[in-house]
Structure formats: structure tokens, C-alpha cells
Image 1 (cartoon, rainbow, N blue to C red):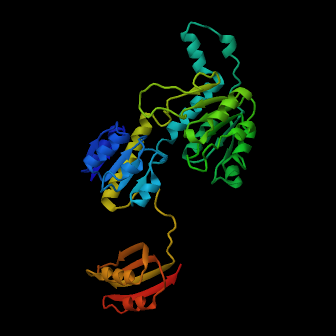
Image 2: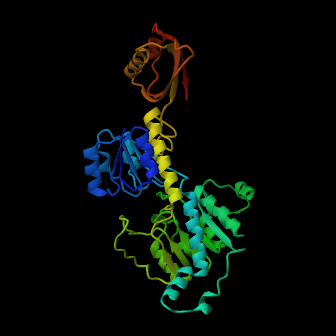
Length: 400
């Protein structure tokens, strides 16, 4: 397969793909019109990206594009709906950067408590101020609120517990029983977690449901002087509300992601909160350790090779979990050329839209069984035509 790599990924991923016999076109600085042009010129079956946005025009540029792999966990930079409409698989590499993001989260938490960046800045400027920086409260016994307890949130939880912190969490999939079994507190809502915590860290996916999850009401629920950390996506934070909280509630915050951050690896940067004394910013480096990049690149290569070898797509994010199929027909048939083609033609004539299908071969390759789920009006004549075929052994039909 031809694979266009439009972002920087670790060499292990590139080497693995080439060793597997794929033609890899490595152009790691593509974005915008340059991405569209490259897709049209290279015509890859597979596109691998990290932070590069994949808009509708990119989806149309290569007529044989079949798979987009996001070398990371989040995939909000890809037009997933458009890919689904075009029959293009979208896959991600979840969990491979969880430790890296968790490590940065704990680093930012320590930095907020001990004011490490300010210490360094003053020392470099020749200003000694031990009286100011020697009054940190410490983390032991304090409560960390975790919003989102997926792979990253769980890694953060483990590290916070190693610091003897109490943890309270909210997550869509977290139950009170699960929280108790894990040894953490349970929050009914994100706002309840904010009320109970000395520090809050966000680890939810960026979706329409989580947009501005941290809004004015969320910051109003936080304790005065509490810490706030976001290493997930900028969209989950209302930055106007955050600006209010920095002033009105003396919230101290650390952001690894922010609105308006440059798409390039190196560029001029401006942000209305960049100079605020209560805010630290890092350069969207949560997943950027060599360990995480190697693991993610290797997983991206595995997804591509599995697709090339079997047609299956590990970690696919845009296949329907439930189709509109209302009926299932199971056909036991001779394993001969054209049998299924005839069955499918009868189904087409009946106006049945096939949603799911599998065909399994019995030992000896003399017979097979096809399970076909479909949507459409019931047609007894179509069933009888299929049953009457000489190459069909038996037919069963069920309503789903």
C-alpha cells in the first residue's frame, strides 16, 4: 500500500511500514492546501497524521484513500463524519501516550504548588526570593479532582495516589461502586468534583458534549485558590471564564493546550492570558516524550499493516455500533463460485439493503454458511427463490 505520512512520527513507525513492504511517502510538514495537493499527487490508500487537520477537501483529493490513522488518541482534527460518508476508515492509537500526558500533568501540579517556573525565572534574573517561594502547601493529603477517568485519567490517578493525595473523580463510565473499588471518591457531576477538590485536572475527549465543560459555573464551584490543569483539548475550557477565575477566585492554572495555539512546530505566539501571574503555559507537549512517540508510531504502523493484510482496522472510531438492519438471513450453501452472488442478486431484487455480512467456510471447503443482516420489506417470494437454488443447502430467517 502507499502510505502518506503528513506529520512527524518516530522513525520506528516509518521503518516498520517500509519493512512490511509498504511504499511510504514521508512529508511531515503538510497542512492545508499542501496536504490536499500531496494527496492528489501521491494518491495514497492510507494517510497518517498527528496534529494536521483533515478537512473535507482532503478526503476528496485521493480517490483511493481508504484509511486515515491518527497517531495519537484524539481525532477531533479529522472530519470523521465526512470520512464515514465516503466509506473511509478512521483509526486512532489510544493509550500509547497516556503515561506521557500523566507525567506532564503531575509535573504541572508540582509546578503550581512549588511555583517552579517563577523560581527559575527569578534566579536567572539574579533575584533571590526564598521568603516568597518557601511557603508552598505541599500535595500530601490534598484532594485531586479528575474529570475523565479513561487511560490518561487512570494514569494520573495512580501517580496522585503515589503522592499520598486523595482523589475524587467524575467520568461518564464511572459508577459509585467502581470508584469505591478503586479507592477514590465519586463525583455525581464535574461541578461536584470541582467543589470537593484542591486541584482539578481535565482528561475528557473533545466532543460537542464536552465543549466548554469548564465554564463559568464550573470555576464558580472551585475552591478559592485551587489549582486547575488542562492537558486535553482547548475546546473543553471557556477561556473567558478561566480569565475571570484567575482574578476573582485566585485560581492558579496550567495549560498545555489553549485556543489559538500555532499549528506549526515553531512560530510567533500571542495569547491574552500568556502574561498572567496565575497561569503557566506549556507548548502542547503532553504526548511528546520519546517513549510515547515510539509506542504511538509503532501502533500506527500496526493499524496500517493489519488493514493491508486482513482488511480489519484496529481502533476504528467510525464504524456503526448498531446498524439499521431489521432482519437476518442465514444461508448454508455449497462453497462454489457464484453462489453468494446469486443470493445477493435475489436480495437486491427484493429491495433488501445489506448492512452486515459474514461468510464462514467449514472444514474441507465443501460448504459454507453466510449470515446476512439487512433492512427492507419482507418478501416471501425472495426467500423461496433463495431456498430453491440448487447450490443452497438451507435457509433460516429471523427478525432482529
